[in-house]
Length: 331
Image (tube, rainbow, N blue to C red; front, top):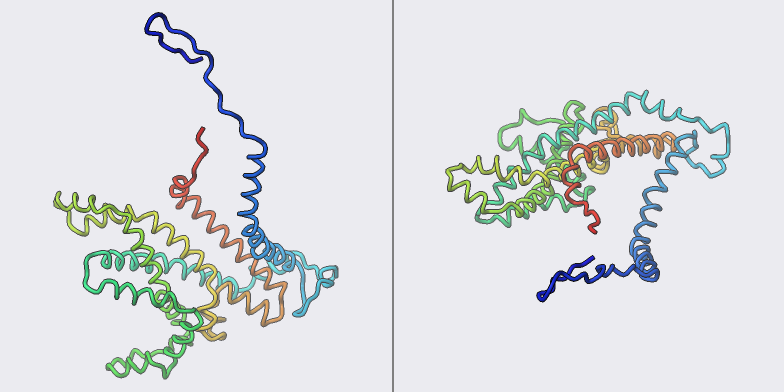
């Protein structure tokens, strides 16, 4: 009920407030059609190129399939092996070491690449002559194709390549190494190449996040006597935390699914000894060793490890960012 004040007398009831007219069926149906038209193509692509391959890989992983298998082989009960391919994978020292290599690269990325990217981004965010040129040089390795970058480093790191030649020229010949063939050194060399390749992306991402940090906060802290380091530690870096968390998520998924740089740069014999990853082991066994069923099992394991890490990180690290991004209906 709505009450109207009458200046000449007591309050007069004006009756119930008008209700919002209900949405018509044609309007609701049109909205559903628009949503279907806009999301349909993307949904079809997602189902066809993401969900369907995962389902087929899960089916293939339950069979002992020949290299040139056909659909008829799935109907052969003698080829059905159940979870034997998964048991073989987790019982293989090579695959267990490949999982360890992935997580070593993941940890090194977070511990070394993250702080390095933040430090360089903070320096490049200050007024500096030629800052645009430095940003360009840092970002150039990231835009190079992985095959080109991997082959270039493979040539440079040969025993008679450019790196050893440079060390010899500056009088540091004692530091010459067989960078890609030494099992004790190959993984660290690979991580150095990955840092050179992907550090530019992390720096550009941090610089983009720094643009959202208000300058007024730093200026007020400076007036109160805070040093540059105190401003970065207590103001800039905490406000940069959402960007850091997003970069860490991308870095973790990239480290778990690492394939192309390893496959192109490091020789297969060394991969088997020191730098094998889950993805390279999957391709080696599934395609080149002629075991598509076993390779499919490796693919499924890789998928679930990546999914588990992503959900775990989202639950404990990205929760505060996602909570602020979700828009709830307001009545």
